[in-house]
Image (cartoon, rainbow, N blue to C red):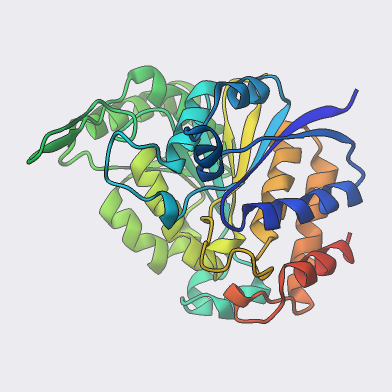
Length: 343
């Protein structure tokens, strides 16, 4: 029986990068049943909400969810009563119980010169950001009056324990736990619980605690020193986007959002919907391809096919493929053909 994959093209360049991704998946021999749903701004335009109950039900019944991107200036608003595309993403993560966001950062030698950082700084970097997805300031109680606003940052011991275990299991040599324990009470609990999990269950893995401002500096001055970074929701959101500079473009970073075993994962590029280039056929599809590879690996236990896609992307870049965001002129179609020719 073929695996069921829900496709969420979303907004902006989303439809332009998800279509060639299906070509790449077909080329490595996958046989999936695809079902497409409106999501984000496209869903707001059609249904008045970024995430419908029908889409939630479809995602829950799937084996995996492949999302392109959401958002755009059309739906930007500061009015809390109006829907925003990003609410669909937060709502879907919550509905599926997805609590661990994995963002690998591995600059390729072929793209070292595309990075704003010096070659000798990024050489050898191969890190994973493990971001907690269900707690923190994004989900805390919110208040708003004419003159004041507040967002509660809250974490439970359970939330910290389970994300810490994900990080320790993924580590090859070291886990860097990032917090702001010198100022924030939730960070003090975070540090305490991570230390307890390390001592009780993973004593053979090195653990270090780094304040978030120092971590931000170290990411661009000594990135190869990191192995696995584990941190709370907002810090992880910011640090993983900062880490995109190491690869030369945010258009190169995939991600996976995972829950408990048996829960369908959500796989998506880190980049946004790029409305300024939507409809022009010039979007970089490589992060979408790599997100599909993460879907194969973490969602469908298809390691060989995942590795084949990653190898094909690496080879295409080594052979000179450069999209506009990487300083070249290749459009979406040319980038897709370059990857397909290496499968």
